[in-house]
Structures are given as structure tokens and as C-alpha cells.
Amino acid sequence: MVLKTFGWSFAVTALGLVAAVLYDGWTALGLVAILSILEISLSFDNAVVNAGILKKMNAFWQKIFLTVGILIAVFGMRLVFPVVIVAISAKLGPIEAVDLALTDKDQYQQYVTDAHPSIAAFGGMFLLMIFLDFIFEDRDIKWLAWLERPLAKLGKIDMLSACIAMIVLLITSMTFATHAHQHGGTHVDKAQTVLISGLAGLITYLIVGGLSSFFENRLEEEEEREHEAEEEAERAGKPRSAVALAGKAAFFMFLYLEVLDASFSFDGVIGAFAITNDIVLMALGLGIGAMYVRSLTVYLVRQGTLDDYVYLEHGAHYAIGALAVILLVTIQYEINEIITGLIGVVLIAWSFWSSVRRNKALAAAEGKAEASKEEVASGV
Image 1 (cartoon, one colour):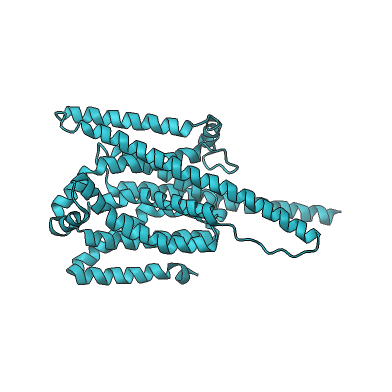
Image 2 (cartoon, rainbow, N blue to C red):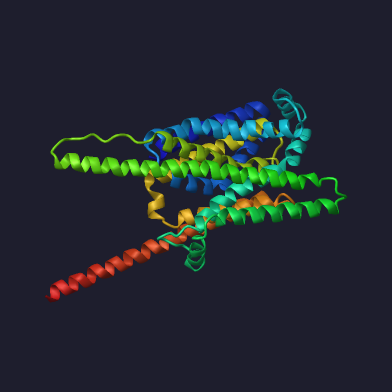
């Protein structure tokens, strides 16, 4: 099961490390290995959240997520995205941007650093909306009940998530503007950039998330109708084959997953520049990491881990909330990538431990109930 799920990841790791050695010797191999670990640690929460969405999709779309999706994730976000950032911010053509990335790595890194406020605002707002929509939803299972119960009551207010997100964006852009004025006002226009990029992130979430929810609801309605038709056919004694229901619903969920993955990868791409500014090594290291995140997502779905450890999804969403705040804070202040990665790992580990404790408590309670039943039966 492990080899079947992680086989491609192992193969890509071997190829990537060999390519790194051939490209720039053993030092390059070390850098690629570090980048891979960075990407996995920063994106573990991504795998948990992705698994929650992917389990609603059929085997065909899960395969698409692992094949077409990985091409978008590795080549789109880890290779093309940094070049696009430079091309837009420096007003260069794509070929010039690639040439700059390969020939003048320091200048290339500077362009990416200059574009960081708009990247952080877009990604931060998208992730913040995911977190807010999660904590404002009333759920049967609550992890931090003292916090989640009152928030679920507040969540009954329409459009609360969007309102809070916009307030956070306004405060972020105003804080950034004040900071810029203190430095002679040379970068005051960056506050506007933050505001526009943040709004773009918010709008992207509302469009993609809205379409995904709409088609998911349509899919559920069709499945209910199909189930009723099957029951009627059975009563009438006529066999009826089940109809595969994927189509638009699965496509928009796939699209949502890709945008989600892109938002998660912002911190990995930006963090990679702290380790190397070589675009080839960056693509190799982050690409290997992205493969493991994909494989881990599928593994969580097939093992039913989210069903067994019910608080994992909560921990991942709290990690998303933390990452959203960190991205917005990095517009003004520098935060070490190790801290970013550790926060996510700690929250998910805590939620996993809480799930294990819950499972043990339920098993103990069931054992006591069975024992008392046996006692009653023997007494009778």
C-alpha cells in the first residue's frame, strides 16, 4: 500500500537527487534535500485539508489530481510561478525572466523579494477565508469546544467571514502604508498593491469556493435522486446499474484544490530563497516535496485516516489560519521559515494526539458498556 501510493514520489526523489548532483555536484544534492524537507514540513497541513476534499471525488479525479495536478503543482507553482513574478514585477518578457534567473541569480532574487507583498497579501487572504469559513461552521465534532462553540453561533451571521477578512486586509494595508511613510514614503504605493492583491485573493476564493460548493450540492442532490431510483427499481424487481456522477462537480473541486495548493506553496517558494536563489535547485527540491504532499494526501484518503483521527482536519485548519496570519505579517516583518513550519507541525501533532486520546476514551467507554451488559445478562 505504501509503495503503491508513494512509488512515484520515491522515483521522483531519486531522479531529482541524481539531476542535482549532475547539475552542481554534492552541494546541490544537499540543498535539494533541505528544500524537499522544507516543502513537506510547510505543506503537511495542505495534505490533510486536500484529503478532506479529495475523499469526495471518485477514483478517476483522484488520479487526475495525482497526474495533471502534480504537473500544475511542480511546473506551474515551483518553476513557472517564480519566473512569472519576476516577469510582472520587473516588466520583462518570460524568456528574459528565465535568462535572468539562470544568469543573474541575485537580481532575480531581488525581484521576487520586491514582489513579496502582493504574493503574501493574495495567499494570506485566500488562506484566511478557508480558516474563517471552517471555524464559523457549526460542526458535530468540536476539538477546542470552548472556542469553536461560540464561533459557530457567530457563524450564523451572513457573510461574516468575508467581512472579517476585509477588515483584516484594510488593517494590513494601512499598517503597511504607515510603515512605508516612516521610511521616507518611497514605497507608499505598496499599500495599494497589498490592498488590490488581497482583494484578488478574496475574490478568487469566493468564485472558486462558491462554484465548488454549488456543484458539490448539485452532485449530492443527483446522488440522492439516483439512490431513490435504485430503491424503486429494486422494489419493482428491475436491476439498475449505478451511474458515475462526477463531471462539473469534480472539475470545480479539482480547480479549488489547485488554487488551494497554489496558496499553500507561496510560503514554500518564498522560503526557498532563504536557502538558494538557483531556480533549477529550487524547482528540484520543491518539486520532490510537492510529490510527497500529493502522495500523502492520497494515502490519508485511502487509509481513512481523517475518519479515524477526527481532530486532524481541525488542526490543519488552525495551521492554515496561522499561516495566513504569518503571510500577512511578512509583508512588513521577516519571519523565519522554521517557525512557520513548526507552528503547522505542532498544531497537527496536537490534534492527532487529541484524536488518539478521544479514540481511547471511546474504546474504554464501549468496553465498560459491554461489560455492564454482560453482567446484567448473567444476573438475569
